[in-house]
Image 1 (cartoon, rainbow, N blue to C red):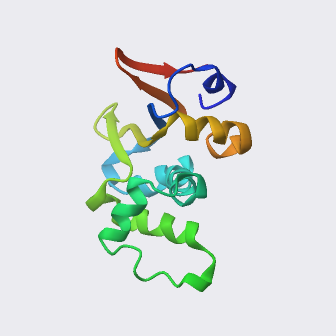
Image 2 (cartoon, rainbow, N blue to C red):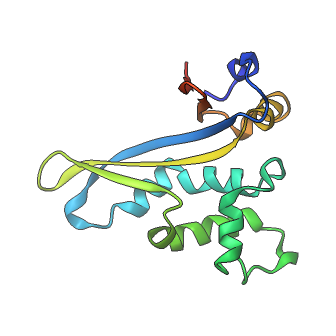
Length: 156
């Protein structure tokens, strides 16, 4: 978890870390309209958009990619509602750009569990600063630290 445990890690501040969101819901997949409900119930796009538009992560790849592909061209800068705009753009274009990954586990021919997840990369120094100053931004996200000998997952 992205909490005080991150502050005890003694790796270089430039060490790459991934913030991981995982959630999901039971669905009736035979209707093929369950995606929107899962996206809404988990808040996956809202959580991702919070990270994407945060001043703490101003150089993130997702925002750069959205700009490069013209996805943000229609935003009116004076609207002061950029985070909600990013949520809408990600929801509308997720099938083309896979901002959020989804996987269906089928229980039978009509019921199942739809799991959604995203991974957001940053560095350990930035994450430590956020945990100290704005912990709610990363609360509830799992942390995977990339080291020379493998990956370290920080969990409860």
